[in-house]
Structures are given as structure tokens and as C-alpha cells.
Image 1 (cartoon, rainbow, N blue to C red):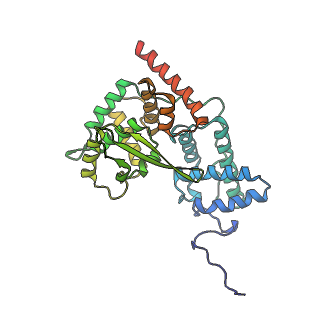
Image 2 (image 1 turned 90 degrees about the vertical axis):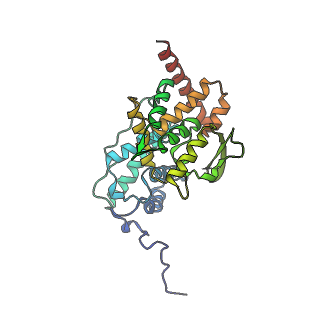
Image 3 (image 1 turned 60 degrees about the vertical axis):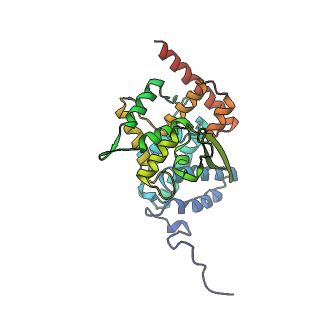
Length: 313
């Protein structure tokens, strides 16, 4: 029998809890946390749920984030993203469990001495229903489009703001889906009815949904491709930069609410419902399950009621 130890695939990857410290990347701690939960007698269901929650944290903040870099404010920003920025309904029950995951995980890191302070200790559970999202009114959409169209990049008109705003407004796709888009995902065969294919993974199964685009958007895309010449994905910048662009559009348009991917996703769905699209069309376009749709459907109807009342005044 060989006396040689198996060398870890990643030299900096910890193999036992004692290897963890504030400079350890989040992604490397998850297997050891799973082992800890197993030793604590947690069920496989709980372990799977806690793991999924930490994977969401990694999706939002980056799996390479050092565990010592997490602060209470950063965790609160993550929880706000779950409710308002991810584009997927977050029930009160799911929200509460995710707060619990953060508290258990960071308490464990603190207890074993990996981090000097527990940033999740001050994170508070919230009670009551989730706040209603905001959807742009028709006038606000018009103002935002005009503002986006006038934004500049040096001496040139910047094509990215209008292209980005129009894409999310018309498709309702999530930020992560927009970041993954490639030029090949745009079907131009029928230029009057172009289609974008959104690829996503659900329970380890890859699925696709096809969303029809506004024919005029192809012109915006082509102008953008000439100006920015992306090599792989359509957007060759960070997701945070795109968030700043949407926020700048809102400020330039004089819209008091901060424009975000989530806001445009709700706005897109509200516009479709008000234009007479049936519920199955809207649900499929958003990529929601029948269960998730029930909560979203109720919120959409409420948002439409609020818009109609505002327009009557």
C-alpha cells in the first residue's frame, strides 16, 4: 500500500475545520459545514436546504469571497436581494430559514475560531408580509427610455443603456440570465419576430425558454455590438455595472424609485397582463413554477390595481 497522501485538487482548499480562517473562500467552507451539520444530527433535508441557501449567498456575493470579509451590512444586502433583486418570489418561510442558515453558519465559523466576529448575530428576522414590489408606470417607462437614449459615452451616444433597459423591460429576464446571454442566443431568422433563448438550470436539469423580442431591439443590439465588441457574452462588464446603469437611467429620468432588474421584471409582467396576455404566457415568460406563480400572480394584480387608481386621479 502506498504511503503517499492524496494531494487536494486545490492546494488552498481546506480539508478539516482547523484549516479554516478569515482568508478562506466561502465556496471551500461549504463541504466542511455540511459535515458539521451531519455530526450535529441534522436531517438530510435540512443539510440540503442550508447548502442551497449558502449557494445563493455565493451567487450573490461570489463564491471566492473571503469569509472574513462578510459584515452585517453585507448580509442584510444579500437578504434584500433575495426579496427584491433576485427575480424569484421569496416567501416568509423561505426568508426565515435563510436567516437561520446565516446565523448557524457564521456562528459555527466563529465558534471554531475561523472568524473573529459573527456578522450574522445582529441580522434580524422580519415579521409580516414581504413589501409589495414597484412597477414603473407607462409615463415612467417613456421617461426612462428617453433618458437612456440620451446617455453618452464620452463624445458618443452610449448604446448600452437603451439596449439594456429595453431588453429587460420586454423580456422580464433576471440579472443572472442577462449576464449569461450570448449573441448566439438571439434567433434572427425572422427579423420581424426575433427570439431570445434563455437557458437555466432547475434541480440539476437544464431547461430553455424562448421569449419573443421587439423587432426594433435588434437595431439597438447591433449598434451596441459595434460600439462595445464583446467577445463572449453580450454584456462584457460586471453585473454591478449594469445595476449602476439602470440606476443612472432612473435618476436621469427623474424617477424617485431606484430602477433595478427586479423592478423591470415586475414592470414587464404588469405590462403584459395589462396588454391582455394570458396568465400562462406571463408565467412561462418569467420562468416560474405553478407554485411560485400563485404568489406572483396576486402581487401583479395588486400592482395593476394601484396603477389604474393612480391613472384615474
